[in-house]
Length: 240
Length: 307
Image (cartoon, rainbow over all chains, first blue to last red; front, side, top):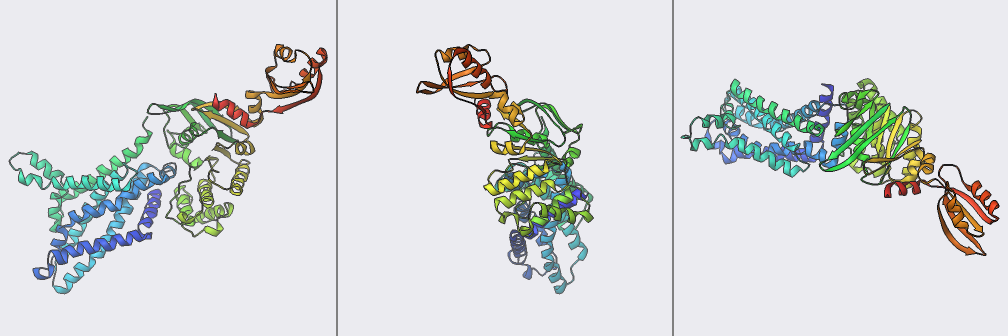
């Protein structure tokens, strides 16, 4: 656990110490709040809920989360520091989990800047705090799944741009799986499979503030699956 | 201490390391010498458990480099080729990170870091970001990183590449000092470096060990000792060649006042000058010049890695 913490501290510091981290947070906040307040015309809706904010979140995360994870492995490979890291007395799990937690913490910090919205809602009316809190928790679960996917694709390449595009495409496909079946509801039970594997369908409940165990299990499974694949991919160099 | 047993590494179709074996005892300073692409770096990557071997086995203190990887890694300090570091960290912060990962208790961490900063002369750059440092300083940070947990074994891949002559001398001095207490393996393709630091040299070419021993032994083994003699007489070359243990007789300089200079090699480390002199006496030749010359490591290297 000490090793996980060491990796976590190092990676988290990398995020917040560079100006890129701040630019990222500002840019995210502008886009996410802009969508909610301007594009969705919050002030004329007359509703004190954050549903609109969370409704578009899967699509906003689609572009922002791969940008968080793209450097985690690709940069190590490019700079050669992977050789330093993998010859230290650390297990693959410790490294990957540390990196994942750092990215997750950075996403939490980024999301925390949206606190102005619930505060505004509180000033304007009487929002349901439970629903908002539930939505935040759900959003972080979904964000965690995106991060795990992005971290995995970063480990496949030494090029950050390639890592970004691969992660974006993979997440996009998992989102589309939730939309496409609506148009082909005649094809039979396969539709349920698509719906089940989609990152999007599981977010519908979450956006309403409902935390369903099934959705939690789904997101945690995605995280575990991709962290596991990541470990295997880093271990693959040892296969003879 | 380190046992390498018929180690091979194959990258696809290329055999980068071809069935090499060697032992390294505690406290030895061993130089891996070879042209670029000979397999030095690959060998080091396998020693540090970064890469698996295709065949063979490496043990450190009886521990398998792959089976007990974590324990082995804890005993090794490694400076990879080109000295990769985390460029966005400050020197002190980076060393603290390494100390933490190396399992140094938080109470002793500060002390270990300070010790390295003093030993590697990093006082001036303690709070600088690594990407702003010169190559020489980066190399020292790399060394500090490798030594922070006081490992028994230090493996350095071309520690002097890209440094200026003063920095090279500093690093070589450091290797010599370390050699008093630690087992050091370093690679280089610069011969004088290997000669000045290593008690033992392994010459690697095309993935094979082509020469092994102290610098002196190596010169003797491969090239023998050359003798130069300027002789006046009849049938000199033919008679020299007729002697069993005199090899490679050749004229190096043409007649000058009737003296012809010949170069020849003996078979062993011992000089054959005496034998040449006796032969001259028996045949009634006149000798104007007679001296022996040990083969330099350059000759040995060229001989072993060109053929």
